[in-house]
Length: 420
Image (cartoon, rainbow, N blue to C red; front, side):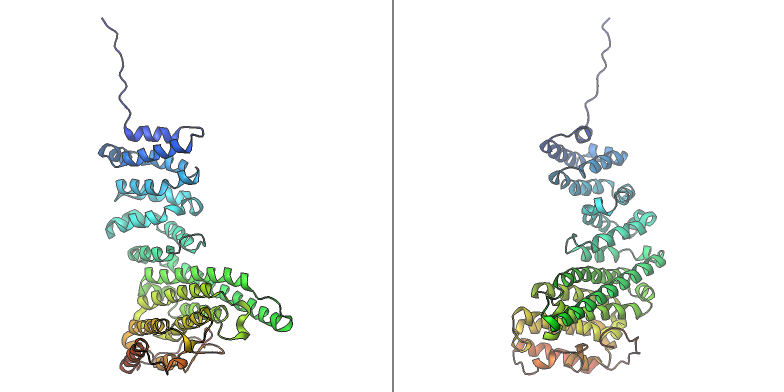
């Protein structure tokens, strides 16, 4: 009688790739990359997908190891994470718990894929996956959006994610209110630091020709860009009613837009007396673009309720003309018609967002009767004699909208910001 020989079943493709990637010791990067490629292929098979759903922890453990590899090895983790998420969907709970455990420093490279995976769920599926871990996930996403090393599109991705969380925000109103208040406080604090440093630099420059606060200004501007876009994204995510409650009606938004305008008057100056913290033209344009994004996310969210903020919102948009003039080393009057028409088009869009609630003060702010900031006149009067069709068409459209809608009374808001 022949002895029985035990036959070991062949290891699955998924199992083999996991064993290779989990092998102790420092394997050559080329081997790791090859094994990562095999793992991704295995996740695309019926057998591999079934094994991953049965034991997602084994795959996540390996992904955690790869995060500590070389740059090339770490770069394999986001696509693998996306592939695993597609396999686990709609039950993303294990994946989200793992991301929370990783924390922001390690897991931030995975957030775009996580947002994309959540976007692929139905509202009911997303609520089921997020509800037990909603607050820590939003905390991580906000921290990622505010990190200067994150992609420039992070805040826009954040806004797109947060706007789908409405049901969850309703169950976490105290958290939403706390985040709105924190962002508003940070924006005000950063704006005050810019103003204080700029005034000190301007005084020193007038006294002895000392250099301005350029480096501080650039760091502060970058910080303000992220904070303002995050504030707008949060408003967009919460929706009108929840945001108005979290922002104490108009109070916090008055403070935010007023703070941005206060900083912008120094960072994008219109006079020699305010050159103490002036940014290079490209950096000034980047700051104004971020502030404009914040204005439009707020206007698109609040619609008619944005009317009390029209003056500050319009003034921030007008800073574009100052940055364009300084970038071309020319006056506002000499700006190309394309730059002027673009800015006027943005002002029109801001008015259209408010519809019939456009405040009675709108003509004054559009036509230049108000200052952009204290001591800085509006650039619009200088454009009255422009005759280019592109500029005239935007001016006429604005006048038409003002004549039709600028009649709704707006209750006085708190005296925040440079336009108060």
